[in-house]
Length: 338
Ligand SMILES: [Zn+2]
Image 1 (cartoon, rainbow, N blue to C red):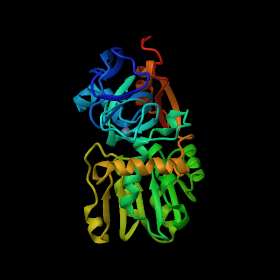
Image 2: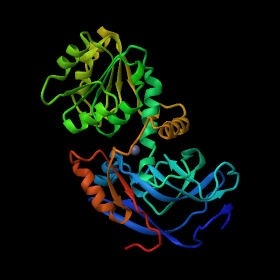
Image 3: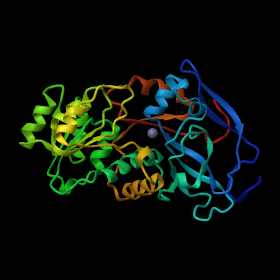
Image 4: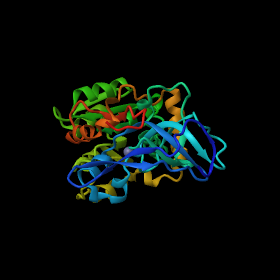
């Protein structure tokens, strides 16, 4: 095998299983030769990979992103099997989390060095170390600049909203209000540090926030992505305040630009694509996971075996209310696909 300076138990000339999403919600599993890691690359034996909303979108319609659908999976965690030349800082046997875009729904995949970060050696529950979504939150919080005494609202307590609540600096936020329509998620938000919760199915969210804050608030983080939520968030904000659009708004909508102007709002569209250095975001995400600031042990609600990925995709696509985050685990130990 060329280009490999060090290797451990990497199976030479073995075939590995790779998933791809086809039309009509079909998944194909192809057997491919393992690629050698090139210069500044590592070969990772997969142990876990998060299922992202983007995976579901591509699973439902592979035409959304044909290149990604051919090699899906971007929230991988695994063990380094082999490293390419020039790779000094990571050795075979070390455990890593990755944000490499595509390819992690496979037994093994080759990742560029700047898409992997080491995780603690004693990790055994790999699903808790999916870090790409945490890096998205870190990137967003970095740009949000929460200030001491701010009143902050998080709309949406799904997986990402709850991660945001974990990561916010609660000690110097005045009021942290979480809004959702699901009481279980709201009680998780409370557990992770929200000191006020509002069920927007039972009461008017804008009025509830105004009642809590006695005034309007300094920051609203919108982590839903549904139509109408940006307007709702705008109604909660005081002049000069910050509106953070974190949710993915797949459908275009009319937004209240008039109010934005008259309130002088700072509107931040914090997608990971705004990050100047996403690798640093991933490094910082892992640091904060090690410290326990981000703790996914209660957020990973569903795990599925790699061989059961079709069922995983179908169930996640249905979006049941008890599903916070699903992760594919139990990748094949031996190279036969049942
Ligand atoms: Zn993702």
